[in-house]
Length: 461
Image (cartoon, rainbow, N blue to C red; front, side):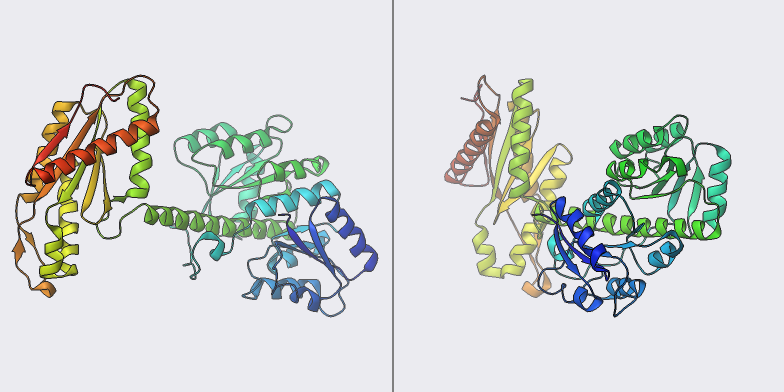
């Protein structure tokens, strides 16, 4: 789907021209001539970006921006304001995501839109959870790394910005910035001259830092000299979140630059929080909430990975199917609360027995699965017996709500040790392992329970 852009411009000729320019880039553009029409666009299909020009009959452009960014419905929609340099600071203070000159050329206009669409926040409901997100703050004051073309300019940046921002500033050269990122000492935000030692090498540094694991999620600002304005669009397309003048020669310029950096840090904080939320949701999706173990959704793909490595290295791996004996009687006699307590306790015992040697998952009900890489048959049999013994090692205490007391729990274990043969695909090898472990488990149940049955042929077939 193409991005939907609402363009608010009171002057008809300017509005038509801008709409044509944006539509030529295949954006879905809705052009309006008043603030009231802007607010009418939020209910059915909220736009991805709002572009505000001038000449609106019912509201000043800065007031419109302020109202949009403070309204609950529209606060997350990025706003680009078309203002001259004298009004840039007021636009940023009103909440604008970015500002552009009214006569901005197509290259810079499209680069800025691409940049915002790439980095703009998603609504929480699209990120997977509909509830209100918790606020996010840095654990300490943000660190801003200053990489200028000379130490004097970096000192000047720090002097102009430090009084306007509650941040820590470090002056680094390009090599120091890369080395620090490699060692994990990344900054929250980098301000980099477009030309450091040579022409355009600041942009190369930007690309390098964005490719490094430690610094790829930082914010980036490129400082550009007046005679190098053509680099602005390139910097945005390379991943810079903002471009500022290299020379902060006036109080207004320094204040506008500080405001731009604050906006970028705020966007980074929201992005960091969203990334952490998504990682947490992924963890929840792969975790059994009762026992804290991995679940089937996690275990089966990991088993395929282990099978693939085993096939490549021609080494054995083992799969253990573990099932608690007569577990239904626990629920029937003591209630489901007692059953949950038993599952949680046995899961912990099994995990303690396996340690970091492999993966353990609850596959459903009272059934668990363990997978151990690089595990020959004898080692597999011995571990299976240890798992069986750890289950029955001591009685399991029941909750007071279930009547208290303690019960004896046992488990049957089926183990399949697989030594990969030739021409067997990893997916097939994983299925073979699970099937053999399940067959061995059924055999253990048939043999009277509370025992181990091993299926460990010389080769997988």
